[in-house]
Image 1 (tube, each protein chain N blue to C red):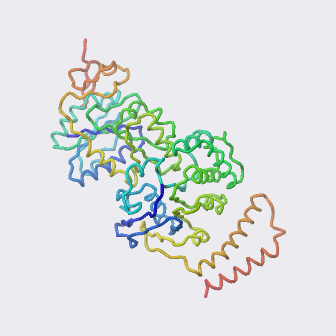
Image 2: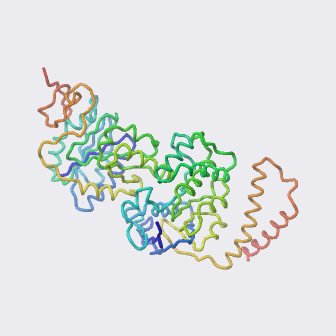
Image 3: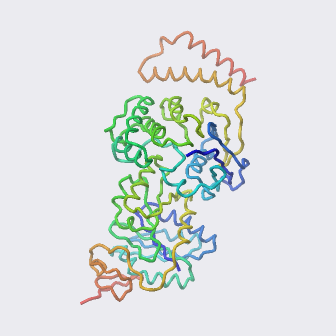
Length: 273
Length: 233
């Protein structure tokens, strides 16, 4: 099923004031960020979209697909669902094995069982200790659960609209996770506190007090900043792997030290200027 | 008048969802009465009263709460008539998974807690399998995949039901619940029967009686006003 556009029609914030952003259109291939302090309504916005709210949620927002109200089947039947969602949940509550769970979900979404192996393979590239098919879901760690949810969404729930809520906070490999999720020509929304992920998007919706306050277009300057941020981030991830492997930092290379020093000087001076 | 019977395990969110749905019905100008049946204690009546809705509480004590609700249904309906209500909403205690307190003419609503695990729908028995509507709560606590599996399992047990995902805390989805209630058919005032016979216990309901009128009941029976009696030889 192809869609050309999803529209968010603004509702009201937590204290009942009309949202300053009245309408947002997102088209295939576009990635939007959702930013704001905790409690500002980022996850609620994502959940309004997932449920394809029609003025029936707290925010009273309405979601349109190709300018029309989606029909009941599109809103509810997982086989016809256009939306895949990674929520902030860090654990599974279902008491069953990983394999059993994936087979059931494949059945719900109307895809073949052969996808199950692919989910496991992908999940294991995102997390540290491998996940096995006969493990019980509930014994998986936060990172393993999250990796499995990401892989499940990428492979089994493959949908034209992808909603991602704070993929960075689970300790999984966020760049790889994002790459697996966003694919080509999808509509993507990423809730994030991470400057790297935020600047990877084309626009970001700023949330405050439950309402959509404004939309910021990512500027040329920010795109340039993103390159430097990627370097810093890459370095931090490298160092994180060292910590994870139980190594020490005695042999921290000259180049790494120099990189940190130069970037620190550059942005620190801009901040204080 | 329309009769809405709401069943579901304790803590599944029956009251939370109903409070939102009743507020929406009230805003649409509908007059509702609520009967809440529980076993030993309830303070749900206070939550309904805050909406300005008349509430009748029935505590079944040592009688099966679903039997108690069925036995007292006529009193509840009469009371709702006196209130000139468009709706009587009967919220059951919902305990043993063996009863289905729905009558053939009511709108049978089952509230199912999504965090209870994907096999729960298979355990819920007739109050799920004979429901018209199933309201799935707490879906925000689990992954999208688990939600989808839960939904599939409900349809395995009750392929004809309509499923509404609702959040009792935020009120999300509760508008759809009130919409379903508004579409429910009116009671015919003829003889209404249960959809499913109740399990064995110590009154005539326990041996398969499905007629609701008081004259058909024998055994140890408790009226909603607390009067308990034995009818029979």
